[in-house]
Image (tube, rainbow over the protein chains, first blue to last red):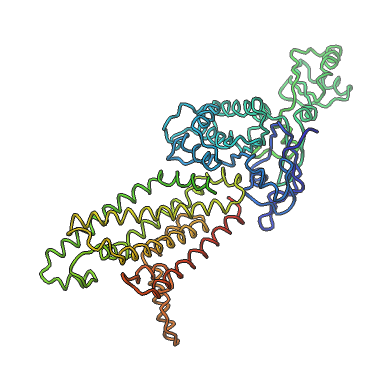
Length: 304
Length: 264
């Protein structure tokens, strides 16, 4: 395992008797884009708030950039965060909002701010008040705010939530360029799992406050089951052939079945069906998507 | 800390409340000066006018004008209260706090920076008010008399200190409760002397059980109202101690709360 930027051990946050985050032990490698997945109320935001220093854990520990306990205070400036929504003053321009953050971080410089605005595609917004920005623009400004001070770990909570497809693509590109171009480690949560799948290198799945799975994107790909969708002319015969091969399958629609099998067995299945007198008019290999995998793990379909 | 202070000092004048309050102060003082001038010029029996104004002199001096305006709590105090609350909770309200609170070594520095900013801007508003007063005295009366007297500056500085204390206490309440509504209600209640009125009721009850004490004397607003031009050192000391105690206790409670509580 490469160098860890963030490591938590049995991190717990309780509100009264309810544990919003329950014994989470999570590992974020340097340079990775860590997709944090969970339904509403699963504990993602609470966990991220603890990482960002906005909320104190009830128990457990965190190690960030090798520092733990009170030592974390010394590396707080290395963490940029966008939690829930971009905290911006609506009556100020994007430049002025960034200026405030820069003043607080002690890095105010006109060119630096313009560079940040350029980086997130807001260079041409001028004096327009951020209250008149679209949601996508506000989210990108939120990312720019999180980037002030050149953080090495970026914590982004639902940065693409509520965006239109164009906005999603813009934010995705921004995150992608930050990860690829600047080597920033990113911990990101999102409900839009297909989008997350395009950028994440690692995943952590949290459900009801408990981290139920943590894996790399490669491991996730391997863990997902393949399927083969086949159009046939005779369901009875196909059923008999597949049964003899010990394969399970389900009917998608009349004369259209989905076989649970590794993609490498596609040719073998095709041959067996044809030999068994079944005419195969279409054969499509597909992998289980992230959403299906997530739902299978959490056993639910709501708010995925 | 200095970085945060720079940020707050930069943010403060950009708020709408800052500009509106400046305009209101200008209007308020002009109207007050005009009203005094009108009454003094028109009244046949000046004694009656002086009784209304609560003064004994027949000349409008700079200390007297200050006592009739800033020394009576009222609108200046109320404007300050509203301004202080809106500023103190501005970053909570917008969510801006979440992007900086995690990156500072101690969250209490965020609160401390606000207290200092509020103090600086109370001085600013007070100085603007005094400046407007001097202009009004020149326009509506025969100029700012007794402006150079020691009494004037002594009174003005003590009054300023009391307003600073009041601003810090209101800022502390706003930060403690993190609510504009609670902050403004508390701020206005303090600034219009409602607390003193309540304390007067308590005084009456306390008197009935045999103790004769004026609790309003031990409040900031009570101190502002009872502050006299050319008062005794003993009175001045008591006012200063009362204001200091309130300011330190309120600020400490808010700063501890800032450090201990989560940022929602």
